[in-house]
Image 1 (cartoon, rainbow, N blue to C red):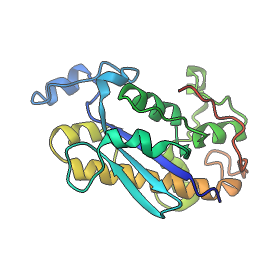
Image 2: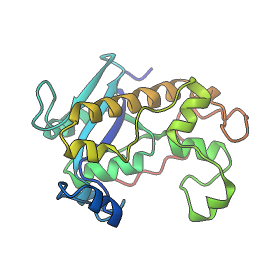
Image 3: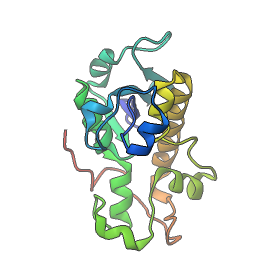
Image 4: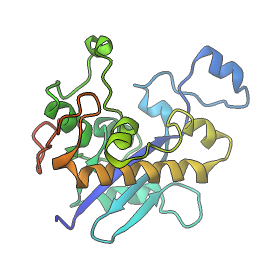
Length: 207
């Protein structure tokens, strides 16, 4: 296995604004406009599984025993990066001054192996198909993802930073375990074997 291989995931610091959410949380003053407002989202943390070191790394500012986010750019140099929905992670990191090229986007590879376009489109709403991390985990690993990504920025704003980091680490571990068995993943919608490629064929590098 490539010893420079890592798996990465990120969590946002500021929740996505909606009328009811803003009213529910008046103490929160920083909001992102939508899911494309990467600068407004802010970066709470980036968590990594390092295959060479066989351990997790956590990058988050102003927290004890964590690497500052500024160190992540140097850490990523020379690494082969795996992510689930890596276009989001790359865009969020880029908006926060960290260039990260995802070499293997697990979600894109899953979609193409299932006969779908690499990227989701609104036309798929009627198909009732899901390849979310939680869905893939339940079918292939026997457990789901821990917590909700949508709750993470709210928890972060309320000072529950250890819980957010724990969620991020959990998602990294699930992505790692799915990646490790990528040639024998089961499609949660059909029960067929997805048989993902060892090397990427569908990953679209954007950043």
